[in-house]
Image (cartoon, rainbow, N blue to C red; front, side):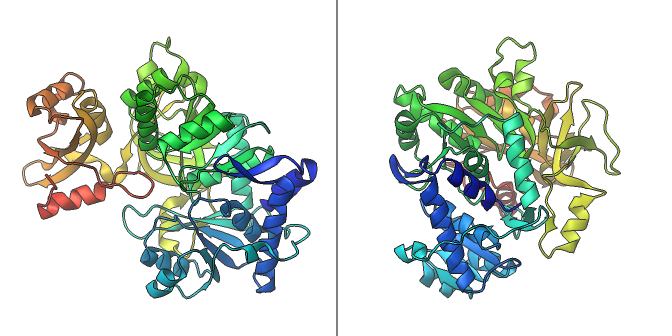
Length: 502
């Protein structure tokens, strides 16, 4: 089913319900939202764009984003959302790889100079000037409607083809396993709408809830706290680094997050110390999800109740997990041959279900590696306990093998973060002629640089001695991509070149 059908239905059912907000100012109701999307669809149809065509969206978060997306689907075309923070050359590669016929963007000159040869259209009053299409173009459940380009931390991004059925299953899984949504609620888009934050628009459209686009166009903790007070109940998706910054800002402002209903966090590890601090300050407002673009936002979920249960005897272990399988997903931990591992043993995480992508666009080799016998091989390492809770170890490529023994960087990072002098840390392996690899920790100090002996003690108090770093490198900041994920490939490259950034 075409995702725009949900918008059309909601607009008919509650046409006067408030829909799009720019900051605290209402832009339109649901009737207006559908009319804007239908007008964009008419513009595309006039240009001969329809099913089988791909249209890229390279826009910052703003009030035109959702009408543009839904306009693409009104015309029956496939959307290619591109992070608005990417360099024009990166955009040129993605739009070229996707064979996009048209790109919605603001800086046409920069894109044309970078080699984007598709037609370029920018937000303007003319965007909504045409008589809207009467209804969305019919699409089947297996029709690709969103090409999700991965973050590209290890090379060129891959285009995961998501079908209408994938997005519907993801949205219904949100209601079953993450959070209920009511018409009075508001989705606040502080993370890039081209990725996780934008994917949660569907369930809010389905329920006729509000959509709030911060005037800053991104993540500003003070702005978020203000909008929550004024427009709550507000829900949002946030990367762990965003949650940490929000907690820091709220503590400084003596703000307990009034108006925040739910913060769904994911996209990277949330360390136990950080989520404990967030829960202590904001209370039970959090839900964790684990997913990938290849199975959008939907592998496991750690519920609000699990996170808030301070009396559970294994609370820290639960907080360090990513929860249990979504209702729409089967999740296993397997060996290299695909055989399930016993509870508590580490292996690769595989998943199957209606949210798993159709495949990567024009990449047979990647498809053969990732999709086997109906299962998506995630490339992530983890372990399942007897109660079905999944704990991530690391990406398979980030595993450190020292002296023939596997060392998982995350457990070393967790130990180091218990030291009050450590603000952030990332652990990688460095090639070594004697040990194969040694453990190296890149550390961002909280204030004064901690003594290395104290950091060693933080490790040996919690993990085996052989796992502690052989070397500490103090840096002002960790390299991150546009989604807040630490670029361990960059850190390994620094080690190889000798330019560590100390």
